[in-house]
Structure formats: C-alpha cells, structure tokens
Length: 177
Image 1 (cartoon, rainbow, N blue to C red):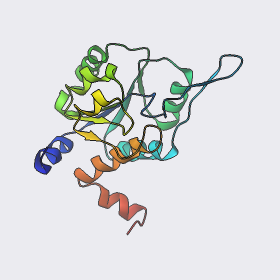
Image 2: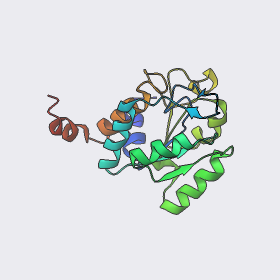
Image 3: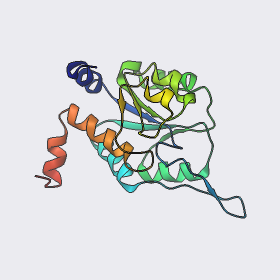
C-alpha cells in the first residue's frame, strides 16, 4: 500500500476496536487451582489507549472469550464499551457503528487470529500483531513490529496519533524532544 493511501486510511479513524487474547495480552491464560484466570497486560499499551482517548479516539473491546479480568482492565483504562463471548464480530461491530453513527472506514480493528478476519476485511484500518496467524497478517493494512501483549497496541496508538498530526502535542506534553 502506498504512503498516501495508508495516511488517508488512518486520518479517518475515529474508533479503535480491539480483540483481547493475543492483542492486549500475549495470548497466554493462567489459571490457578480454583479456576481463577490471570492475564498479562502491558502498561504501555494501556497508556497508548489513554492517549488516543485524550485526542478523541475511543477504544472498544470485542473479544471471543469472556473473562472478568477483561472487565477490570477495561474499567482501569476508561474503556466503557466491552463485548465478550462474541463469535460474530461483524454483527456486533455493525451495532457499534450504528450506535455511534460511524462507518467502517472510520474504524481501526486489531486482531490476531482467523476469527478476526471477517471484521478485519471490513474496517478502514486493519491491524495484526507481529505474532498473529499468518492468514491474518496476509490480509491486513499493518502488521506491528511488537507482539501481542508486548507493546503492539501502543505501537498502533502512536501510528494513529502520528498520522493524525497529534503526536507533536503528545511530545510537547511529555517533553519528548
């Protein structure tokens, strides 16, 4: 994809939809003897999502699995819309778009496995993590350098903020340069 088209796709983004396992986490699920689930999240991914929100781009979680841990993490990040136990992500995304008066070209979606492909094919900006299934990496607009749960979400947040010319403000706020 040429740089101009890539830039235009990202400039249109108003909502970032994320899968959880393998995207916000490294995909591992740890269960203790009592069946309690533990997931690993990267704090920089969370900060990236908070930066996006500060600049007007909300995040929505759309996961095939259901986990109380995800609800806690979403609340911690200020993500108000969480859909879990979803196998038909396209159907739910259509409802999300309708409720927010958005079109698919205004959506970024980040996934890692074949269940994500139908939605990845529809959105304006499709993203796969570095360690996604090969079938997924072949069809997306962008493959991260970082692995899922290891900074991939933060990477995409920065790509979006840069393309939307908002990174200079971030840099000034944190005295990056």
